Image (tube, rainbow, N blue to C red; front, top):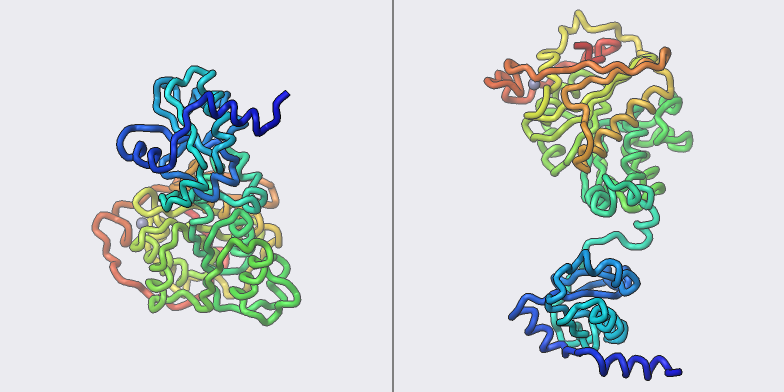
Length: 392
Ligand SMILES: [Zn+2]
């Protein structure tokens, strides 16, 4: 029986070892594949540029997939040169004929001042937090990194913005913007679940920011404690958002947001609710209709519906806002079929979904072929009851 040290010595005598300076030169002069056989967490902390990662434990099963050519020039490395010696031996037994183990490993590489890559990867705590995303092939680590890089703007932290912001934050959307100039009042709490009784009187945008911070510290929230106007819309939209979730409850904001999003080229996930009915669609500039394709102008004030507050079943915004979050996540990830040119209607009393197709209007005053509206219009606020629904 031999000790580990003796075994290592014996293996090293049977394989080829290459010193760091020679390996670095080899990297420059001829095509050599550097194979990192360390564990995942070691790889995540940095590796030789261009190396491939095949952990020692999976070496025999994965190397053929990674390097099918058995004549390829391979340099295997670990942290200090021990695991890679055994790995080189195993590769020779698998028929690889041109294998060297990097003497001193990655530690020696760094000590010699050679460069290394820090891969973009989720750290252990993020891998746990988002593990149920990582298990879905359509999301996976790459998708989760994409979400963490995503920027989504929410117009309104009310009924629709509450569930949308909570789910987007929980999903790990890295940056959320929240535009709302309102404060939390007691009539909100029947449905606006991002707020709470102890926040009565607080700014809604700040209240949502606090709830999100408690839910997921990976998310940065930018608060815009203002109402969207023609004065500030370019400043707010101009900060590089990937998607906008529209939870606005009035005509002026809806038209302003529509025109701005068309000009800024940002998709808007629209939602609206009234009593037991809700609807959602995605207005994606150039790919589908915009809000003005359906309603070129707001109705004149005298035709606007009554000023009485419209009631709503408390859970309804939860359903529609969650659908909006679903569309926003799909757009951020670039997966699935977003509701572009499709209006989804939900009837909570009947528990029925209906879909209506919507078409882009080539004569649309904003996104049409010869636009007639080219500057922001501040419409006077007027009452918006049932007619705030998109009814084509
Ligand atoms: Zn349009």
